[in-house]
Amino acid sequence: MTPRNRILVAVSGGIDSVVLCHLFSRTRVHFALAHCNFNLRGAESDGDELFVKNLAQELDVPFFVKHFDTLEVVDREGISVQMAARDIRYEWFRQLAHEEGYDKIAIAHNLNDQMETFFINLFRGTGISGLRAMLPETDGIIRPLLSFSRDDIEEYAKENGLAHREDSSNASDKYLRNRIRHHLIPLLKELQPSFNPIFHENLSRITDVETIYHKQIERQRDLLVKKYDNCDLIHIHELMNLEAHNTYLYEFLKPYGFNESTSGQITSVLNDIPGKVFYSPTHRLIKDRDVLIIEPLSNVPSTIPEEIFLDPDVVNLTTPISLTFTKIERKELPIIDPSSHIAWLDQKLLKFPLCLRRYKIGDRFRPLGMTGTRKLSDFLTNLKLSIPDKEKVWVLTSNDEIVWVVGYRIDDRFKVTPQTQEILKILRY
Image (cartoon, rainbow, N blue to C red; front, side):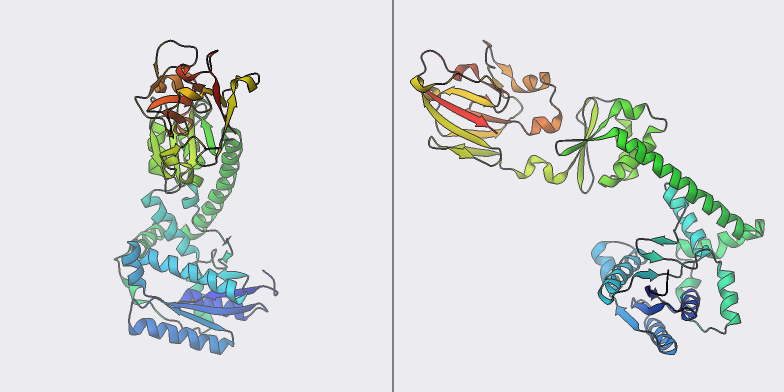
């Protein structure tokens, strides 16, 4: 942080934020005060606002205030009051900083807040990031007081004669954070008088361990998570060769929105038969034979029409797949290209309109060169197609009979023979 920085200081009026303001006032840094009135404590909330406004006037710095209907957010989002207040204040701080040209947002979190956050995360269950609690700077948020205890802050306020507001809700044991503050931490300090510096040292070690941990996670992610078409693949055998593969999988899946509970369920089916499907808010994961297939929900084919009907004059089709149709007289027939992406069909055997649709369980056809019909599902399984690839299979039908498994094989009954006079060539591109 330099004198050129413009800092937006979040101020509740409590002792921590008042001390932070006083410290900024002793620098050459340009700063302003931002206060949230959550309208949760009536006249007390309005008193906090007036106090911070007067403080800004005393310090001769800009003052910003925002009123929130916090309980409306709680009802709308179905979240706790604490969570709602946290979300809306950070959203406003970032918006305000952007609009008013402030580089960073300063929050008055201190070492005691670190302790409380550590134990809250520990009790609720957390990864290593939860154990290291808050960082001095993240995403434009700075916490200059993070290494100072509340005792240090109270002593500074007393020495400098700083007035502040007391939030009456802080005295209540209704919230887990307050119970930790009022009961657990005093007990720990009673058991170990040097608890504050010891905790700070341990937190520093955990932060270092987290750095090493994430570097190793990223190294293995680069090796195991591979791009394929519009999907990401994780090879199950390679994953299971890793020690603590369940932890690796949890970290690999976190960017796709999968939580720890779902990650654990996925770990439990790694040796199961293929076909299990899991969803996050943004992605779908399919447990296939040898790989986990992850794709955005936007790629899942359910949004594409199930059937498209084609009349005899169709020339081009671009949605849901790209096809071109060409009629050829027998005397003009070029050398037939055997590529699977081209269908050469006897036009006279087709009954229009043709129907392009997804394949269905129970579909049967006679693959080119065979004498009997086969289940289409068996045909696709023998091709070793993954579940997402199977979902992308389209079939072209005539009078409810499969003419072409598009891009794979035509039906033998519609092939070009020496007796064919008019040919329909269909190219998938």
